[in-house]
Image 1 (cartoon, rainbow, N blue to C red):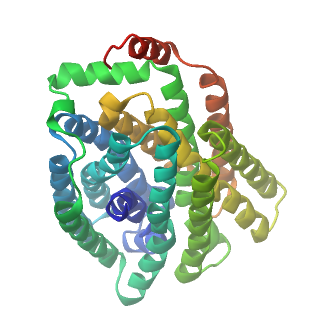
Image 2 (image 1 turned 90 degrees about the vertical axis):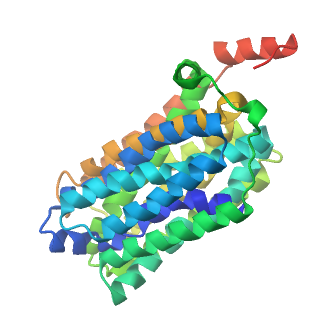
Length: 400
């Protein structure tokens, strides 16, 4: 669980750790807020698309070998980011870093699906978030402390060291969970067929959209929060890191509550409750900004939005993967694509009005959380034709 949590946390660390350095990056490169946020967008796009490749390869070759290659490439890309001479070269190196880091995220979800399903998977994903949730808590705090001793370049140096540690730990202690007889050997055609099946499964699409849109709201918060607190309200990088850490603690607390509640309440009901809470927080944030409310209203509203992810992520992931054990890697990859592509589109829009307006962040978060709640309530209310067909085959003794 610790290793899988570390692999899943590689994304949050790569995203959150350099957030306190956004104003410093803008100053060093003489770049605008949107140009700095483009380094985040590049990482999110490549992290999403890279999961498609990593998922297909892991379904064909097993979980370990693609993971080792990805982590090795992540270390090299992180070192290149540390040496970037301009904001646009940093964008390019972040693209490479995202593609490489995708292997860890895909592997963490696929391994859980190899071993668990249903409520058991939701409980394990909740436990995984106990480790993974430390990323948003620790990453900004570590990043702000690194900034005391060095510059933003030292943050990417730290990420390269983290990649080495995860690579060594995975080689020593992470077993192979996909035996050879369960691997897909049909090449590109079979991979495309598996992806097409997933895309045509209405229930899978509903859970994937709910997950992607809600996580996209969190990425909008990630992209805008640093400028709202530091440029508008005058927070130092260290105080900003504390605020982000508090929200991260909220994610961990809700995910552990979810792990307890899922024993007696269905994952779908908990998912809808989490999305409802996110929607309340998003609408409240928009109302606070529209009314010219103070910092307290913004902080409370964003805490509700971010903490509720602890109910959304484990349940949406478990429910989406439940009917697709034969393509767990590809299904995991599509979930990642939904999250990171939506986040990549939303992140630069947050800075469209400059670094001294909270309006774009509030509007985008409210729209995304409302859309996520709509997706799960309209698309997952009954079994999809794909799921019903699979259930009939199982009843007849057929294979997946």
